Length: 324
Length: 169
Image 1 (cartoon, helix red, strand yellow):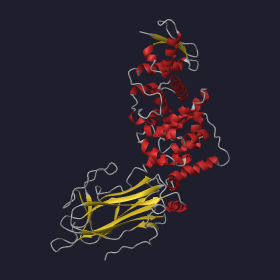
Image 2: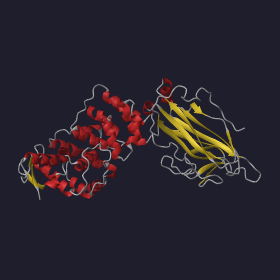
Image 3: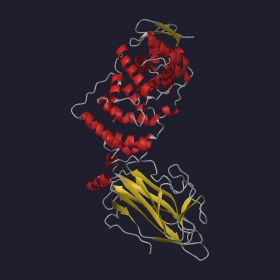
Image 4: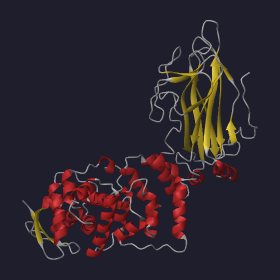
């Protein structure tokens, strides 16, 4: 028996101890006659509750539920967790204040507005997260026969490597599940006006021209594409220069945007290409187009985008791109 | 050394240095008020704290004594440059200090720290309560805080749904 009790005391998170302390909670209640805590103290306690338990506090009573909706509580929580408050504050300014806490919560637990949704943007983790659709891609830790990557960090990451296609058409994709990343429909619905910004760096080798194309698709939960950006193929001369290409899906507060967001679940990022083939190299060697700093972010927009600037590619039917 | 008499609600008097007492925002104000209203600058201030009993006041003073050389934290908890929990390490002394207390005492200590404006003590006691309620069911939290659900109709169920939508589809 003694031994068992000793074990219980040591395993702080064991169920048994949980039970025991619960009884203590009850006993404490019976033994003491403490006046209720003032609101600022309750706020302070709730501000310390971890991200995975905070939602539960909304169920305790109306006062607690109201506290969790309060900006001041979240400001404390951000401070407690050492997370930048100013950036998110400028995002929520002027938005539906009653539900801002939903965004504040999603940002604190999932960094929805300050992360790159592509976790392996330049191949530092091999092909983790990427699906090869057509052979062959390589990873170069230091890109060969081209300029080094700009050393500006991409959302805190400094990548020096890149993906390289072969001289045969190579294609791969990265699928982001927004629901898993904290952008559930209730969150997405509160984000407009905002944009899904997609970008990457592209380069050819200095001794070889290249061809590439890319597309980004928005898919619903049945994995059906309902909106996409698919520019036509681009030829790049042998230069070794990195170029940034980018595109943003904009979501305003109009009915169409809101309807689109209701469906939004996946973002599929596809890039593909090759390099010029010569007899002197192996066709499936790393001589093709290079990609790096692949990036998908969500960013707030503050001015309601005008209709013209809203996603000008939208009316076009989906373009299927095939290797010629 | 200038002293101050701090008297608890149940009449116990604690004689402490003014330097130490002034680490409590409330006592600091009280001492200054006493100074201004007293003709004799040598007079020993006497401060009555009608909401805090001796056992709790002793704990607060004990904590202040231990932490008398810490930098004073801003009383305003929303202060932008104040240190957050992330940087606030809790000392072993604090852990030993809090360990024997039951939740009732901790709650009283929180009220005292709040009333006397002792930010550091308020921080660690709130953190302790948080750790005691973390992972608890909603009913257990209500019990600990002596709260009753005051949701009407299906409001609680609705809130539960909203919570689910925040993390699921």
